[in-house]
Amino acid sequence: MRKLILTALIAATAFPVAASAQTNELRRDRQDIRQEQRDVRQAQRYGSRDDVRDQRKDVKQARQEYREDWRDYRRDHREVYKRPAYRGPRGYAYRPMSVGARLAPAYYGSRYVISDPYRYRLPAPAAYARWVRYGNDVLLVNARTGRVIEAHRAFFW
Image 1 (spheres, one colour):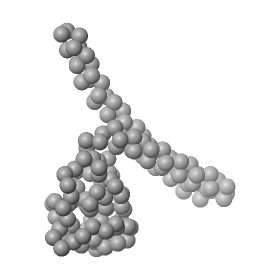
Image 2: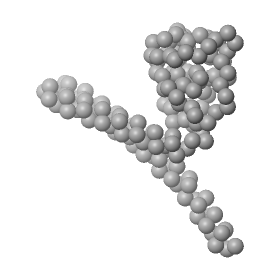
Image 3: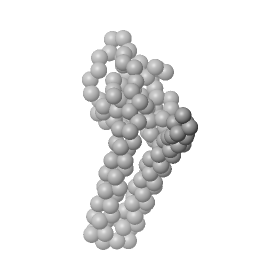
Image 4: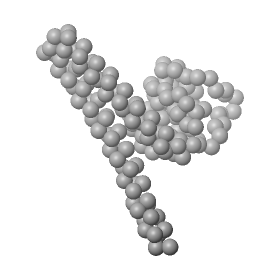
């Protein structure tokens, strides 16, 4: 019985540390991307074409690493991305949306807007933008114009 309790205590302290490590890894990856983008701007000002090309390649690799880390986080935390069945507004049917498409104002209701984007490791939206659940997709929408700024397909399980 004593071993069981000790094992449970160790497991309870280990899992939050693992989740925190993944979150910190994602944060470091975002910082790396910003640093690489600064390097690209610096190379555009003062470097040659080869420097700019190399820096852009570094940005692309940093973004790829971030995507892979995010996918690993999402795979390890499936319960966060499981949501109840989606029901769209009455009279509207799902069709895949891409950047630049216009979303109807019916989707800006509290039922569809994601109020806590950090829970899903989404970046905070600008003052005029909203993260909206659209089927199993997540869209960043300009609330003034209804235009889609960013789209993540098959976001929820």
